[in-house]
Image (cartoon, rainbow, N blue to C red):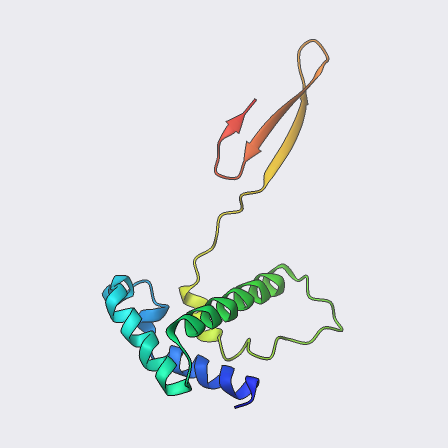
Length: 128
């Protein structure tokens, strides 16, 4: 089976099992049910549960990165859209935005004219 065909078949099987990606469903938290679902997907494709889970994480992560790049307008004009982007578009409403954990440094002048540095964390914490 060619990689593209495998990935397309794989994505379709996952899409048909929303308990694997829809965190709003009660079965999303049922690890036994999800393990059985991964087992069935693996059997259908001739792969192990571990391979299927790893492949899913990889495809989902790439979709998230591609989506972020598109939303920020950072895609170079010469670069084509990732070949599985449309296949994974069903995930759009199920991806939670990750908090940006980057630290921004702010510099301000103190009353004595010295520069002081305060760190502002994206979670709203301020450290001096």
